Length: 67
Image 1 (cartoon, rainbow, N blue to C red):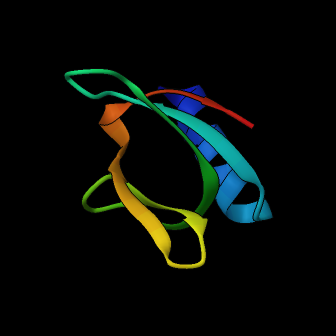
Image 2 (cartoon, one colour):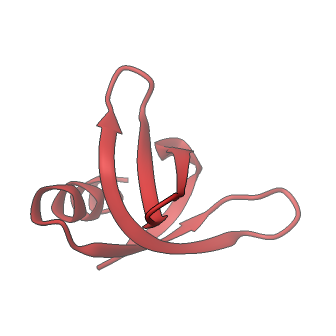
């Protein structure tokens, strides 16, 4: 989990893309984009893939992260 959080923080601070594998009960989802916001109280991130395309992802649902 620490490596995942480090990759998220690096993406947020340096405005770099990150690839996340997110748990899904049917099929895990691979997402690539930038971390625009970190919501610490709710332990989630806002991942932006395009100008109007973003998702709020719970950190505990992230299986892996790669820069």
